[in-house]
Length: 340
Image 1 (cartoon, one colour):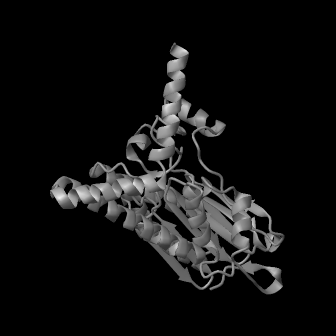
Image 2: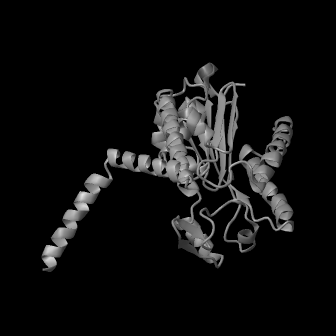
Image 3: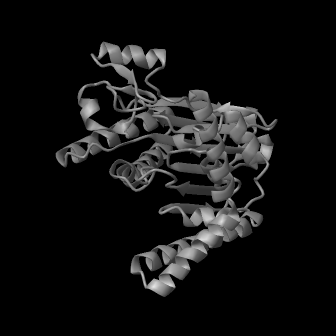
């Protein structure tokens, strides 16, 4: 008896799905509601019908617009969806940045990032100019200057932001180009990668992540811990182990501002271009994938920076995404320069 009942219910379910979900059935249902509204002046039904009609028009229009723009590369519709998009182009350097799926644009429009942008470049410029004037008598180097300036900016920012109880923090990735050397300083999980003369990806930095053995040991010695909450986080909060700002974690000494600094021989590498990007890009691309992708698009207006940002978004990146591409020019003696 139970089996017969289940068979009957199953049959009724199939009949209902077949008839009620057919387009013509739905069409007749809408017509019936419209007639009911017309003859009996039911305001509620009128509202339902009108809302449904407007919704259908909106969806049809959006789909048509997306299909049209997809034929043009799909970029304009996507651009319109970003509440904060920023781009820059000058000679051989291009930057493209989007808020993406984040509620806020932390890559640029955030207290720590704004402070570093406003203070670090100028202080570096002054220090480097003094160094160039007194190079022969100076005990400094590009490496020591980068380290001193980054640590100084972090101290100054901590004083300012902690006074306002602002817990903001930021990564820092600086590439300093001289005649024959490239010096890269990194704090956090923004990352640099270079394409050499053979198209190979050369890592310019290494992410500071809590799960790395060196970082994990340091955090433990400081009395801290890491835990997993979608990603490994210091004190269950921060997904990187070094940063500028983040004063509550700095006070515990579990997060530090110390940069890793690496130097590269341009004569040996003879690079085509380099990519400097926030961690949003690296959620979607490996170093090798990013180099291949950009190398095929260097002739685009943004040297592939805009394309790889949008492709990262298409791939589902949940973060802000900022990418800088710097094209190198072959100089005399086989060395490579990033232009003027």
